[in-house]
Length: 112
Length: 115
Image 1 (cartoon, rainbow over the protein chains, first blue to last red):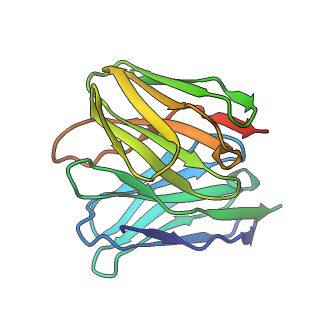
Image 2: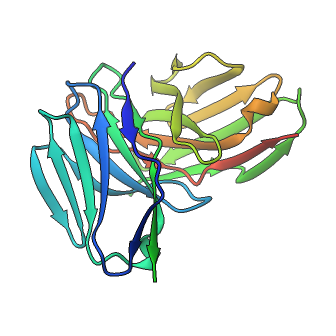
């Protein structure tokens, strides 16, 4: 059973701080990794994708991937109250169906 | 550009009643299609996926079924709903490019409450 693990939180940070969200996965063959943001009652929206080891930056967001450790993280700099949401880590499973498996999500609360 | 439509947005159904949720994608051909369910406060559970018309794969045993009668149409059904079927149902699509691992795009979701 291929799995994606996340700490459910909530992770509480003050406004302006860096929020660090972590994710581990079990399928060593996985090649692509995604972070989605989900506001309460809404559908998930893609915020970052990463395919290679190292860091990928997009505005205030940085995704980090370490395939050897089967670990992917998301850093949110200068956190804003509007960043308060659940962040879902997703991993493509490398079989013929290219399934996208999600973690259970980490709830982030940014305190004003 | 591609868009995905999912309806209805909310649904309240009695136990034992049938269910039909529909999802359509516009602006692309032969997408991979997915149905996920999210229980309250939980992550997304993959229920079904389809890589082509009439091709359905089930991920978990349950009293739900899925069909893909047309290339860009995906339907989730049940003959008799259970209380445990309550949840947030999400349809998603991905580009079906062999060898490429692309992200999934979600519809707006259907909030199903079985009473």
